[in-house]
Image (cartoon, rainbow, N blue to C red; front, side, top):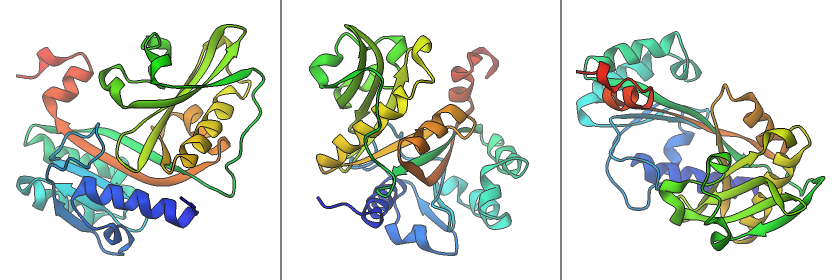
Length: 263
């Protein structure tokens, strides 16, 4: 497939439309859109559908994918504040306070990056690199590679690029086939080998490998993870969209190790 930045963005919006049960052009509107969340086998595999409350913005507006029960609360919220403020405090507390009345809390907040074909290129790595395949991953589902690989969904891990110091794996970028047209990149570098450009070298090379296979690479980072955001930009990615998801309070408490606090 001959990709352009415009085509890559369109593919991402089409996938977001599948995830949110809306149309791709809804992300280009100036007014907000509220859609009823439904299950869809074509959605990204790590999403738990249907959503209670899920907000997406490509910068123009907000598309909210919600349950009917929470439609009014979410609609009132996204129409009350500017788009960018709906994803940050103090305004976010307004939504969280209302959702807590229904035993929900804001849980996941992330920024997503797409390759910029004007900037993406193979970056030099100070160590030998090697392309890796699923058969190579079987012994790598250990904590130091937990950003690059996902043990719970190991069947989705399809391709990787590793950096080696002799026979020792010191860095790994790998991708998961989270949906039909887009593969998500994660990367890890052993602590003693960081700040040498290994992460960006592996990320950029893997992104090019993914594009050669006719898929769109994408990269996700928390806004506060400055190191990860820097890696995305250095690797030839640019910010494309943001998401925010509410989850049941018990789910949030379990993630915080406080499940006994929820009655």
